[in-house]
Image 1 (cartoon, rainbow, N blue to C red):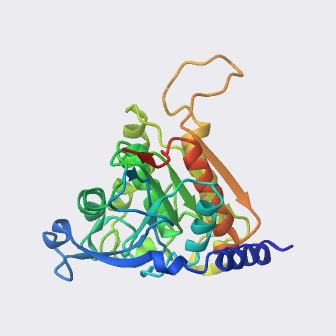
Image 2 (image 1 turned 120 degrees about the horizontal axis):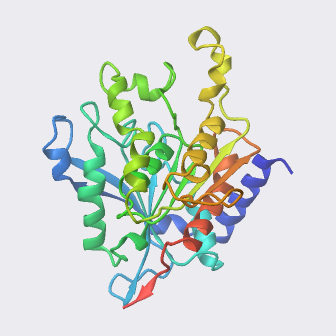
Length: 320
């Protein structure tokens, strides 16, 4: 069966098995001091979709892990609607433990602080996470927090995992919008204002993952990354005169390999090892699968990523 057809069948099966999933999802709003005090006067509010697992008891003695979900470009509160049935089914059949999911809404922010979209990263780290831990029975420690993001959200999840390894214990990147060097001229990172208006290459370099690898490698926490990209994702060579002849270097599957290589195939810890021994590396898994830039890749990737994260450091729910 074709991958897309298979994914649709699995999603429909999950919907039929869990028809009440929408009843456990709400859209909440947080007044964020970081947003209120930044240089962008548009809003002080951060909205987020909140998923509570079947059997959730706010006054009970169970504390739950939280998966923070980072949407792609232009995401709204419904950005993760296709994923909720997958989460429902995995919890129902015991594949993963009961889990809270929080999906903030940040438009085209690229999940960083900027003049164009406000102090999104600061609001996420300094305001949203403490708010969730204060108002819900969470495991309020790094082992109780994971990340997952698709496309632009994959960039955000990669950045947050490396920049805040004391906050998050694992991350899943679905077709992440990563570039080891400067992004192509046609990229959203260049044209949408997240890295300056006009685009500032120095700001991109400051926030991009290569700048984070050194500090990450110098501390003691390890953040396992599960990385998935499709072999038929956007082919930048098709943009012809807009980009150079070797524009395939910008393709997401190429950049997914580069990110995996930087963490897991290079000696980022500078450790001694004997010839032919495994090089000491940060834990990571890479999958280049059949498919494009959508649920034909993300549905299975999300499922496999959740399994990987709970097997590699994310805590199951616990009783007080």
